[in-house]
Image 1 (cartoon, rainbow, N blue to C red):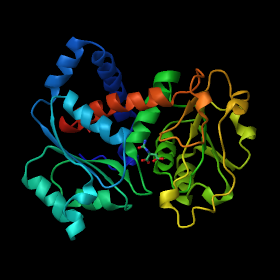
Image 2 (cartoon, rainbow, N blue to C red):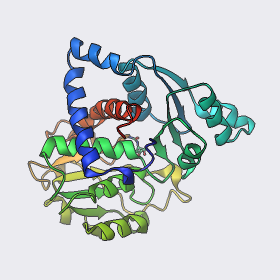
Image 3 (cartoon, helix red, strand yellow):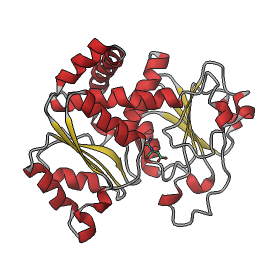
Amino acid sequence: MNVLSVDQFSKETLDKLFIKVSDFKQKYQTKEGRDHLFRLQFGKQMCSFFFEPSTRTRISFELAARRLGMGVVTVEDAKNSSTVKGETLEDTIKIVNLYNFDLVVMRHNETGSLARAAQVSKIPIISGGDGKGEHPTQALLDVFTIWERFGRLDNLNVTIGGDLANGRTVRSLANLLSIYDGNTINFVSSPQLKVGDDVKEKLKQDGTGFKETDNVDSVLGESDVIYWTRIQKERMENPEEIGAKYVIDQSKLKIIPEDAIIMHPLPRVDEITTDVDNDKRAYYFQQAENGLYLRMALIDSVLNGEI
Ligand code: NCD
């Protein structure tokens, strides 16, 4: 099956997936474990198309496939493919199908293009980010990291800050957290970058409590998870109109509870100062590392028909 949205995941599927991620993470640490993982999908082929810049998502997807024994064909900068000659996304995907790939991973700048690609594909497509829409695998690795740290995904107070209007990781994370009971989400942003109505509607439907504020200090002290995001200038019509900037720095660390964690999908620009990195609450590098194990487990589950 395709992985295009977090909406397709149930608690039961996530439980199974996260157990597999933990198992793969443990196996990955030893040579015998890595040899075992290498046999799981040996000989299968993944095609990786990134129509937008990417570091972690692409590297971890491609390494994940290779570590499962797969071959990977990368369209280096997908904008250099026949798309520049005017080929439609649909035709490109039809060709990938003809060549008998087993899996496609794709990131695209136009919201909705992943769904378009999936419509003409018989082989599974995993989204690596869909314009301003969703980034399901990022949210899966975020939630896995929270589960690993707290041992639960319910009754958590989660503060999400930064560019809530344009960040796709925000939508996917909030939607995924709303599957679980008793979570509260505090959205911190300037009035210009408030979270979308669709996200708030979904939270209301699922009975997940949330509030919106531009006063970061008022919510940090009660948070279990602080999830910070970059201003997505490339997605804005008027990048100069972003309003106040919210930065996690040493002064904020004084307010953040001792057992909270600070997360960020990365890339970080200046919204978390680098002197926070050595604090034990800074979790963004562990989070990025988990992306590899999560993507290995996800590819394996998709190819085995478990997802
Ligand atoms: C995010 C994305 O691409 O949406 N990056 C990522 O995949 N870790 C976040 C961002 O670009 O700010």
